[in-house]
Image (cartoon, rainbow, N blue to C red):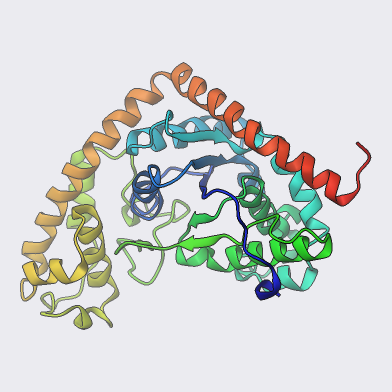
Length: 342
């Protein structure tokens, strides 16, 4: 289907976001925040706090507000410049919800039935899950297409949702005879740690929902806590291998090497060249020192910003106005195309 759609001829734009639920951790920093910063000078960049996505499961309203500010603080502390990147809360731009409904009527039920994340998140009791949890990939498509984003930094676990976005865009363009109206966005998956794993289990993704705080490094952890968590990280008894191929069946070792590579802006091959043959007794202290040095400035700036909510709110308000200036004309044009009375 997508092959039949002519290419989009509009400007290059980059968009991504993080859900406003739970504390941010090292996986968010390496897999998302650090990558957003690297891309912000490449093209106009839109980075939002996904509070609409957050309420697909119950959120305490006061906590949701606080977490929205915390994620915005993390964006800025990580190096996103509000003057260069548009930072805003998803719910503050009404066009997200408007376009999501229209795209719900374009997307097909069978496409959503194939989304593996709903199956994983709803578990054995999918009839108790919210309708929003089932349809949120369509809202995600609206997030992207509303700004006609051409590139989306995503983790490996979100590639399926981006494929759905491409299918929805292509179907809209075809159904309404507007070839090239929506772009077919491309995923941006790069870096040695696009999927950071738990410090307790190298086969499980680092997650804010893990009941063990030892499984992750929170962006608000102090230096002593970061060092202690790395020292206690699960490893195997063997020394690090001499080649990257030797990490294939060693998930914990592979994860720690990937974290070191991402924090030091090196490849995994370069890390192995430096530490291959050494035991974790030598590697873990080096990783702990690196993590503390890299994360301490981010943590300090986050805490400063969180102590000044008025500054965060100013950034979010300004970002929402700039985002709406792009999004509102797009959704108005979509309404015209669909045939809504104007």
